[in-house]
Figure 1 (cartoon, rainbow, N blue to C red):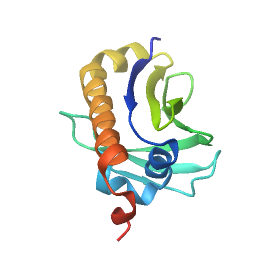
Figure 2 (cartoon, rainbow, N blue to C red):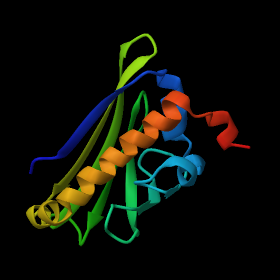
Figure 3 (cartoon, helix red, strand yellow):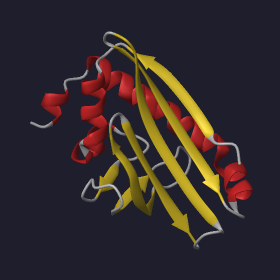
Length: 150
């Protein structure tokens, strides 16, 4: 199944964007797509994620963190058990030049029900991923991450 894929280039440092992505306590203040993520931040551990896709009421998923380091934050959530539906999401930070980086978002549904979910959520997923890029641009390039902790 073809994943949803978006990317954008930001004028900022990798460290600044990674600080936003890796500090889950800041999500309610800046992240429109995932306004709440709770859990230990440890790969392989369970986390609770509130998902807010445009046009759809927020919902909560139980997810397993697959990556949290080296510029990659990724997780997957299984619905109804494999092989029915798995939703995987990742955010990757790739340096382009000094204080310039590419942020790549991928979201993919796998399993027997994947075509149905991809079709039903396509527009909302694409809009939500774009909103996340805009928020990363706003806070990663111009916002004061330190003040978010005040």
